[in-house]
Length: 287
Image (tube, rainbow, N blue to C red; front, side, top):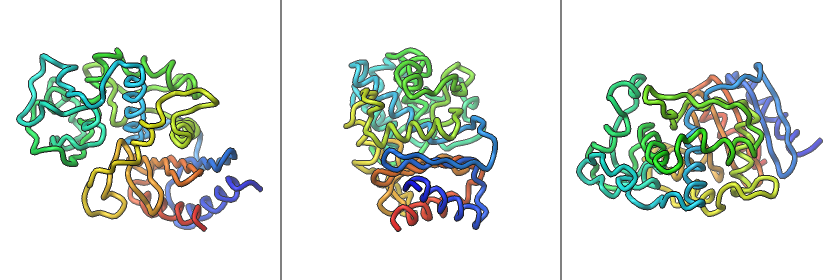
């Protein structure tokens, strides 16, 4: 039995003991993989794990010289009004939720204003501090599209096709843009492929997809995010913890959990059980 298979079996046993509503599990340990399913292998919305894909999109564009992630996004959207203190908000600030601009989530946020990104940038900020908002990622991808064109079309030949992710869809807003912070429809193994790319610092089967330094920034240079355990530090799309691990974490239990050479991918329909399962996975890896 490989290490990946042994970890899979222990994680499956824990999930079934606690009754967590998992749909699929993928374990990568070094070069070995193991999988388990509780439900048909349909594509589902990976929720905020999509924020990590947006981070990768910005990194690829920066590698190609299309954008400077530390330049004000106002330079990409020169006709847009910016709120007080928001003139120097950059793609890095937007993707690390450190713009300080507040726009709370709602089910209707994509239709509450004629343009959510324009509304977001027009709001004031009190400085470069953590303020989590789906609108922040959406605004980042709106600005990025000024240089790349449609972000999904841009990513297909650069990210999705090389990783073997075919015919993936990203939900769109009424203005035709990707939702960015969510709405990306993937199978468990497809999300795991993105996890492998991240673990391997932007390389895929000998090909450089995105710079290793940009991938490293997904779990480095943490922004203080509060006092809640495992939600107290945020980087470029990634949360610190549990323990020595870090993760991309989407609503309803979508998890890409990284620890050393191990990546555990979980898709689920269980929002409130995800934190405890993530902690148990880290304990399993550490044992």
